[in-house]
Structures are given as C-alpha cells and as structure tokens.
Amino acid sequence: MIISYLKNKEGYTMKVAVILNTKGNEVFSVKKTETVCDTVKLMGKHKIGSITVVDEQGAIAGILTERDVLCCV
Picture 1 (cartoon, one colour):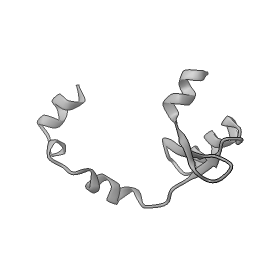
Picture 2 (cartoon, helix red, strand yellow):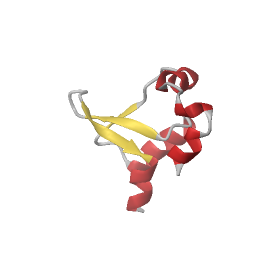
Picture 3 (spheres, one colour):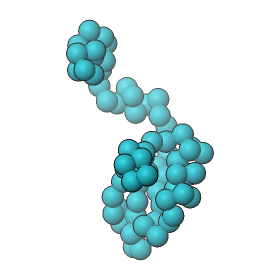
Picture 4 (cartoon, rainbow, N blue to C red):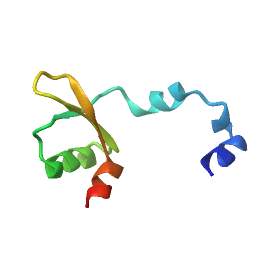
C-alpha cells in the first residue's frame, strides 16, 4: 500500500537523507533498566517513535519502538 502511494509521488525517488535532514541529529537512549513508563514519557516529550536502548557499558542493546510497547499492552 505504501509502495503504491510512493510510486505516484516524489517519495518514490526521494533519498532517506532528505527525511533525516528534517529530523535533527539528537539521539536519545535509555538504559535497559529504565522503566517502560519513564521511557514512553521521554519518547512523548521529544516526539520520537523509537529510542535506542543501551546496556551497562553504554553499548547498543537494541531499539524500542512505539509498536513494541503497544504489542505488550
């Protein structure tokens, strides 16, 4: 469905960089020990749909998305 829409729009040939340039470059992350509630609040505050999760050493452990949270509710 999205592909069909994009084929008829400028987005079909648009590069990802165009979208990234509108989003800013700040990266938000939380530790694996952070609560889901506090993480969702942070995502809402910054109007982001996903957030990087880091382990105790600060290495990327994964990514948490709005969809991930909704699937667990």
